[in-house]
Image (tube, rainbow, N blue to C red; front, side):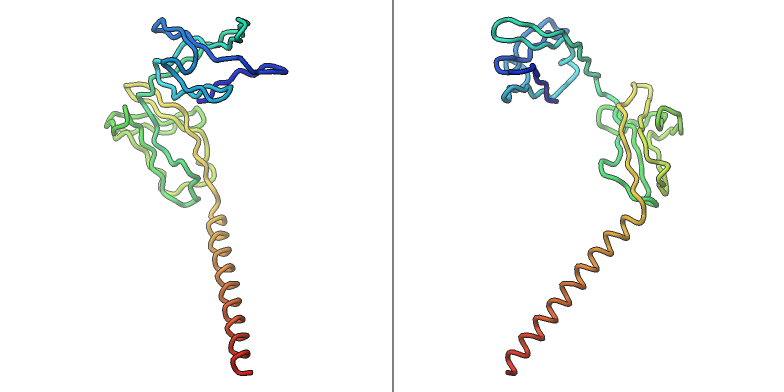
Length: 187
């Protein structure tokens, strides 16, 4: 995550600071985060929860922002790339990165869709209506939401058609060039 101080006119000299729940207060780059220009790069974990603000070299102070980073013990494993209509998709509710084997409840766009004792849910042939925001819950907690994109079957056919057209074009060009070369040899 990138945190930055944006000030109208001139952002030079402003730094991101924080005060965490553990009682530690400091600048970005000192014990936490990495200063990169006027931004602070933070790989957030639950101990990064706290109060953040921007401060200038002369002591000017922005409003505080309270950031809470959830533990992240429960995650929904879902496709990162778009899936094609008709494909089979399995969603897995994991606890601390391992298969949980806990009963999981799956939600799409905020509505309960299925409860699975195995902790995973399979959609045998996805359709455009399956596109949406998914999450899962189990006895250990709730996962963050994850968006699943479904592309039409015609997109797959379009890819194949473009590749075939490109191959045909290359083949035609090669044959044409070979024919020209043959004519030059004969003459």
